[in-house]
Length: 466
Image (cartoon, rainbow, N blue to C red; front, side, top):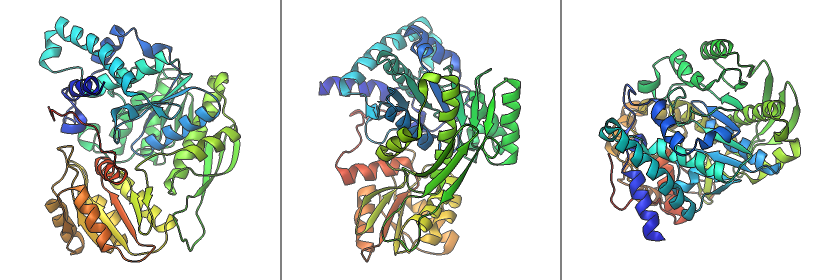
């Protein structure tokens, strides 16, 4: 079984994988026709699924996880598709919080591989351009898995953007856009207007939508798309509101916030957030608005307050302000853009004890490195620059150290891998409330988490990178 499993991973990682090589500046290869042909060869498994499709610069994964947890707690068999994974590929397609099994992964790869090879045999152009891609194949695997297991609802997270994303072949019962901010600007555009245009591409004709977008410019773009496509649009600040309730200071341990949320349909009252950070109140409010809208368009998918409380209390969402150690506190977070770094900084100030703090930072090429550092550096006493090692897109730690020195004149210690960085950080901290925060990339958080929990990521032994 282990050999079979590894062989299927090797096949998947031999495909063009934008998570490893980075997206092209002009995504000419990102077209949905190839994805539709792949799904057609599998019998169009997505057409029978009731999908909640979620896009957004920030918060889409957390919003998706909250919605899926609440749906599961209400007794509905629920699929959740999110990317990237932390440790094992099967994490990308969960049902009721449980990843697909290794046996199921082998079977899914085998069935999809047959169709991929037939498509490439029939169309030499596809073979020449190495399509379908890793993300297209894994998305098809997820949709096929959910169809076979006869899930009652699927919460589907967009990979990047929306309009040309491989997930945008579905016919959702509702669409959600959580937020619009600057990220992937080479691919999505350098203005909020352009980014909103790409993400609004998930809106489908006559299908309702929820928007948690705050800024006026992208709000107008989304509203215009919704009007053109006759999508009933429910907007934050108009159709639903929320209030964030911060934990009382002083704190002696990490403490989540609470949220009071009210939609056009339900006063949800005050709920403890399942994830740490004031920004999670926004994500929870969007998720609750999505659940209310879902109940209106699909009466069999109603979720009440008690189910939300149960779902939130059982939710675990790794590497999102995840506390993995105490004395010192060790916090992992996958913040990889400026907005996420700012949210992390606010979280450390409002939800954690005041204490000496050490930053372990590594990030990805094409990200706004100075912007991330400006958000984080003022909170930390000690600085360690590092890199993740399983993906070739990491920024050399020497470059990070130079950026730190240019911003505030301090000298960061340099390590070449997460294990060495973690060892050094634990030496740097002092005091029972001291804190080590590992952030800058979900890849770095995943590798550090694997070290701490003894479950390193599973990668192909061939190490193929296209």
